[in-house]
Image (cartoon, rainbow, N blue to C red; front, side, top):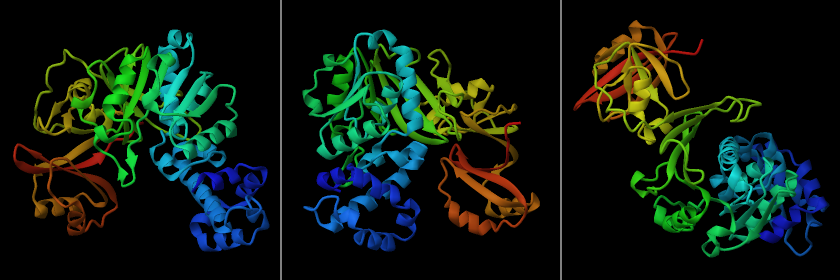
Length: 419
């Protein structure tokens, strides 16, 4: 999608065309939808200087992206505009809203000196979340099409009084130009995702230098960024949504308060935002000794990926007087069951060295029919194992594959749900 075709969608006629397209039909029957659009005189009238095929492609692309965007932005995606790469990297609304709330609570004094700058703002997810909370914010983005899309989102959501965007090079931004800096370096290139922080745009060292020089700053990175790449002056937070690790957030200056490492688990529920009771935190305890190691007790705990990635498994185990099964594996065990968003609790019904014959017999003995297989530190092919077990009962059970020392083990478990 090119800028002239996208600009055509922002006209009154363009918005009318988008309104008339059934988003489901774009996915279910794209050929028929494209054929109908090619015959629609309103599409051809969007821009007489562009081929109808390009205009049709712009409409189809936008409608398809809006449908995909519902997963990140909910119903507001129907009013928003996207690019493929922009949607891929865009911050989920739940995360952006949580971060904007934390920012406004912790940097109230800083924001009294002026607004915020959202560098590499992309489609504007964080910019929009800040503006929704009344924070004056300016986005800076290098790509002209992305600038146009973000500007259209500001207008679509009625946030023009608080948000604006300009085309610019982040490398030329003065960190003192904004009391509060947000920066989300681009982590996608022509060949897809970029995993090396030095290949981000701007490179990680440039983004970090900007954040370190600001009065208050928030810097985002991929969830798998190496710990050694994190600035020693920053406070790091690993954020997951419904059990899926989403990103690493670094807080600088006035925003670097509280624990130096934190795991944050967000849960999305219909009609709720992260500010309405769907947030759980686990903070680093520098005085906590290493977690003890023990054989399996009554319950097994499977910590959320944010807990694992933030290296806070010992802190999680300490909350339930728990112990690791193996000091190198993130599962821990306890005699008490405490349901919490930070982990999943499983009741252990059998714990033994791995044996396919014995495991198959136990699956049948316990009447297991629906099997979930999880593993850490195991080389077992889970799909082959599932076929070999041939479960046929009515019970739902979980098989956890792991190792203790160098020996493979399995744990046959039942789930523990909140009462």
